[in-house]
Image (cartoon, helix red, strand yellow):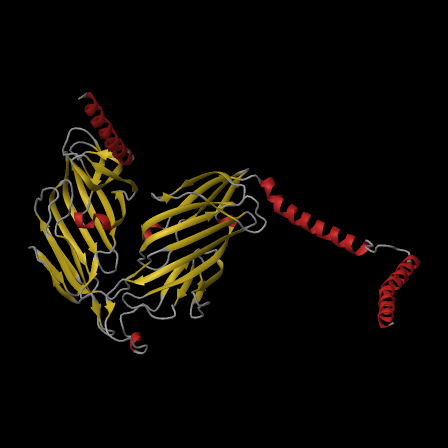
Length: 492
């Protein structure tokens, strides 16, 4: 009995403690019942492939103690599609946002907004929350002919999904088009055909986590372009240059092409023939090529605050079509690299702008530091996965250069922020490679001097050489005379 009890306890320890270790990094919160949302004004922008949900909450503290935290969540169907969440208070100041777990709803995703100024009892405050959703618009129909218009369907919630009670709310859906085939109606509902806006509400008091299906079927010919995978390489040099290269895959996630393809008709069709990429203002030596080679149809414009690259793939991208290309450029290191003694800090974009309303499913960023860099510390503006460091060997490298590897998923334009990479590097070691080059050249010159000035002959006396040559000739003629003598003896 004791043995069985011990085995059972051991099994429980093995199963409970690993699960705790996986979840202990995520903070655990409770829903504050003292918080009541007086009004909620929501705007759903579904005019492009990214759905942007903006909500203005008027929050009231009905309790007896100050409130400095606010929980936000999304509909269950949107949990895996949320790619970015940000918040601000009534003064416009940004709020810290962290993903948390809630005791009452395990397994559900919540975001905690930390208020800069606590809401006093019986007081009100406004909180603005922006959430960006990806892959929520579905092409309907899923395939179209070359010259047909693309229609999509959005499915959401008539009500604001919140863990708090909402006394009054209203939702405005912005489609960006007059061609609205159909939309759900939960009275009061109104349509402004000229602006392509649908207004739902105002609705009276609703309990927490209320759901009611909302659908809109409308025309949307904006580019549905995404990046399944992106490899970004940043090579840092202390000799004044930082090289950046990106290997990008593209796919059109819109309605698939049905029927034959015609180059002439594709001009009028729902395809993606060009897009614009914005690079840093200091970028130079920009190159753009694909698997075949350089693509001459691209053009570059330099402005004061940015470098605009207009990219035209070799063929238009219809729904389901893919392509890939390589984009690279250089920037001066003084723009992004700071130093104080042996301490260095690299501060630059973790990812660049690829195209408007971009979606990057997966991005791998590799940062190559100078050889003999150490004490490397990374700070990112949002959570990323840091993989094992690698080594990179280039010209004159003996130990290999350290490579910091990052992996990110579900990236949009709001993630274009700066990361900071701190490391130490002794400036004395910078002369190692020049000294190595000098040493190699010195050895080459010494070998050349020895080769051209040294005498590699066996003897330097000409008379001795002639004597040896005569002896060799005499010795070589003796076998011939011996052979002739033997021949005569045989004939006799």
